Length: 347
Ligand code: NAD
Ligand code: IPM
Ligand code: MN
Image 1: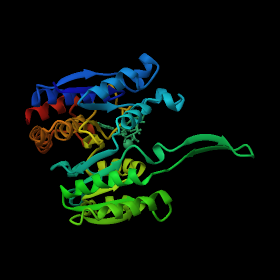
Image 2: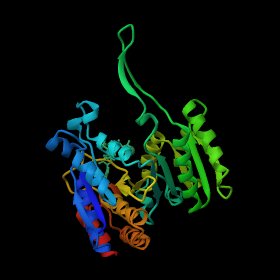
Image 3: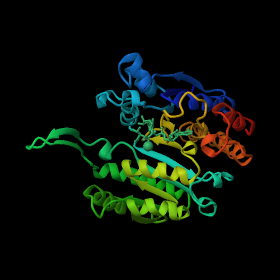
């Protein structure tokens, strides 16, 4: 029995995971599902965004399909109780240090991209984002200066093992693609980044077949909109990867199209759209479910060894898009459900 933990969460999370599950039920009818409370929804019912039972379910499951967490209603809570701690806690507890975030332009989406069509058409990259370190997980706190000014601080930190293991994922990923790895950092200013760069160069010795280059993150952000076709595989830290992937999504048409896989040392992974709970459109049936449907495809490929089924889902999304199926974020008017139906029809 293959068990999928479905953690739908907040806002549009339940809307998009429900549609991904419909697609999975057709493509892989043998899977078993168990739902768990997470995020603001969990806090409301249990007083904690990541209840013990949910963590236990995630540990027991073969893979996790995750929606999104977060709601402005909870932004005033102490940090440990905020919905976002649930996804951070899952990534950390399950050791999911490697986050694959592919961005490519589906044929026909040139008009939805923020870039000129001829530039948009070239985007086909994957961001390998480190997911359990960096300024996200360094010591943080609030203080007062001797003069009584309020201070906030978050420590940016990586050790060499953390960098080496994500570098290996970066090189390994580049190897399965066009053989080019770009490491993105801020080594001109940050010691964390200089260590990052030193270690990436050391790991490169194991991958003579992969061409390695380095770029500062500010330049990378600029190059991503100037000429995204120059990128193949990008490896970067947690914060830079978070920001660059949202930016890449608009080059590819919409944040509603970008899927992700969070992986560790075992086969277990957590699969989620890169977007959040989108409180501005939650409950309206307008969210684009494709990012979550494509995340389900990544789940089949990376955790369940069913690459053929993943290909089938990706082809069905491509077909629906090429035939003009569009939710509002893509300039159309299909509902979340209707968009999923167009994907189902393309299977
Ligand atoms: P967001 O990604 O939720 O939304 C940004 C914009 O993109 C909004 O205008 C939204 O309507 C739109 N959008 C997002 N997904 C869409 C989809 N599938 N279809 C159509 N439009 C879509 O980011 P935000 O507004 O900065 O954050 C909202 C909440 O989500 C916050 O609480 C944040 O912390 C949380 N968040 C959670 C995750 C996660 O669970 N992994 C990721 C990002 C943000
Ligand atoms: C993402 C989100 C999360 C992150 C937040 C909600 C903690 O933005 O998954 O991209 O920053 O990793
Ligand atoms: Mn993000």
